[in-house]
Image 1: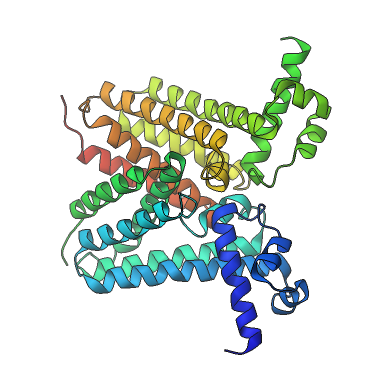
Image 2: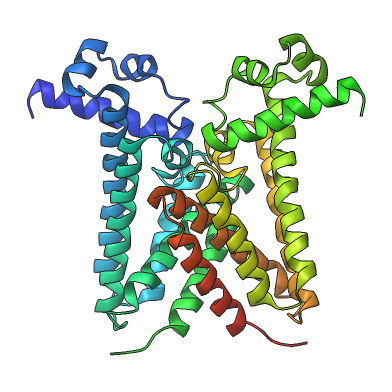
Length: 194
Length: 194
């Protein structure tokens, strides 16, 4: 990794952390450059689009961590309940370890800005669709009908996201865990082996 | 209504609008006072706790609008699918009429700040529990078992909140509408008449 690449990666990593905790409007470029030890000039060198370009890159990087977690959960088992259990467990640990600051890496920024900011909306949509596709593929692999998998996957995503929101509101992993249990029940009822 | 009450109500109403669209960090007290035509002194007179006290009051006011919408939906019908349809319809209209800026009136602020701000977290938790209780009572009235109603109501809330989030990310009412359909299916499967 070149020095420039390292600087860029450091900026993105710091932004991932800050937007997860504080959101878009709560995170200023000054804080990002200070806490990552990077001059403002470097930020604009690597991200000519400024804050939106950097935040979009951070959303993608934060999203990729979840993508990898999904891949790991789905490669360890061909059983939907086990996969959802391990995903919920991972997200619960992340919530507790961060004192409930870290839920979905892109939800806060999405709600704050997606309606008014095309760059953020595009990043957000891309990442959610990526997760939805991953979940749908896993459902198909485990025997769900191909025609039903996309809408079931969207529903699974909606349930996990809603569960993360309520868990942050309650500062308790209970809502997320209950959401996971109900989702498993729902998916089992919808299982129609091809 | 006294002049003071009117001023207070105007401040709260403007804050409801601004936090729904921009969130907590994106909404400054200057913008609130300017757009509501209120001097800063009046804001601090009515809200000695400053921004957090005002935002908590706005969350409660925005939450009450949904509480009333739930009451309306639940008083018009004793049929769970019809009630969920009319709620989803109302929220879909609100999303479209606001160009996807207005989803849940408290979700954005919750994600931005609940982990670090006790005043906001308390307001958020109170409102979500209020909605959950309302939904649970409706489920019991329509024949669901009292022991199952709270967790089914929490799940319903999670699904609607997740649906609103994905609809804002997609700038489309489709995720919310699909969430509503799946939720109806789920609740019907869980119906055990007492």
